[in-house]
Length: 169
Figure 1: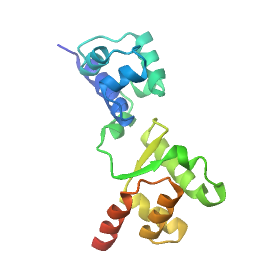
Figure 2: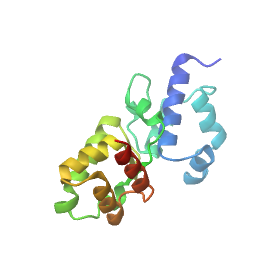
Figure 3: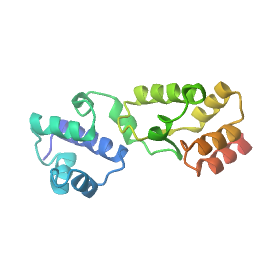
Figure 4: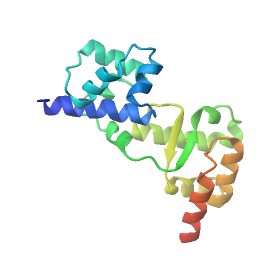
């Protein structure tokens, strides 16, 4: 029977994997077979002990500091939360002119630091974040959403979600 420590460690491994949008088989494919789905799954369930060396290698594979995987650090709990529907493309954001996208870039970096969000490709933001950004940019949330979509940094489905919230609020 897995110890509480093993279960907590496994939960953190699972949260980071899911945050990066990977299934167990996706981990196996992305690692070119280095990490077998059955092995990673057994680590996540706490059924199999993971050595410090393997944990360090897995942290490196996921691109996170090893401390984020150890029980006692708080940020993986945020990673396990259900993702909102507003998704920022962080890779596209890097290619925008800083004079326009600077506030969004700084805001996204702050959210990443607060959440311990280590996937580096996308970032989920909340409706409240969009309202805050609208104040910063001095635009309505709907107008700002359209701008972010035109920049290619926000998923197009976000427009409907923001409009619904704005109409309800």
